[in-house]
Image (cartoon, rainbow, N blue to C red; front, side, top):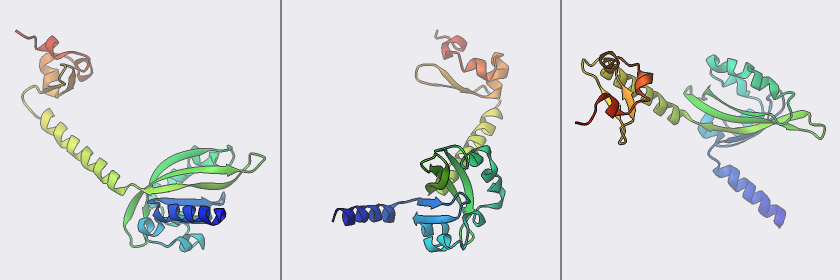
Length: 190
C-alpha cells in the first residue's frame, strides 16, 4: 500500500508538472522524458525515448554551440556537476520556443558520472517580455537622448537615477558621475 501510494504521488506530480523532467545516458540518449513534453515540444514522450527525434535534432541550429561549452564537457568528468542554460528549440509544428534547462550528472559509487538528469521549462513568454522591455527602453533612450532639454530622473530622496545626454553636456558631468550625486548638488533649493 505504501509503495502504491508513493507511486501515485510520484505519477500525480509528474502529470501536473509544467516542465519536462528527463534522464539520459551520458551521450544524451533519452531514458526518461516526462511532464509537459507534448505541450512544449509538440512531440510525445515516447517519441523522444525511442530516439525519434533525438533532443539534439530539435535544437535551434544557431544554438548548437551552447552544447559545446566547458560547462557541458564537465558533465562527463566532474562528479555531481550541474549548471543552467537557455536555448531555443523548434517544435514539431515548426514554432520556435525558448527553453531554460537545469542539468546535472548522476554518479556511481566511485563518483564516476554515468547518467544525466534535469528539468526543462518553456520560457518563451518571458523572453518575449524581455525583448519588449528592451525595445521600450531603446525607444525611451532615443526619445530622451534626442531631447534639446536636460532630463534628470531622481528618486523621492533626491538620488539621481537617470540623465540624458543633454543633461551631461549642460552640467559638465558624465552619467556615471551624476549617478553618485544628490539632486540638490546640481539644483539647490532656494
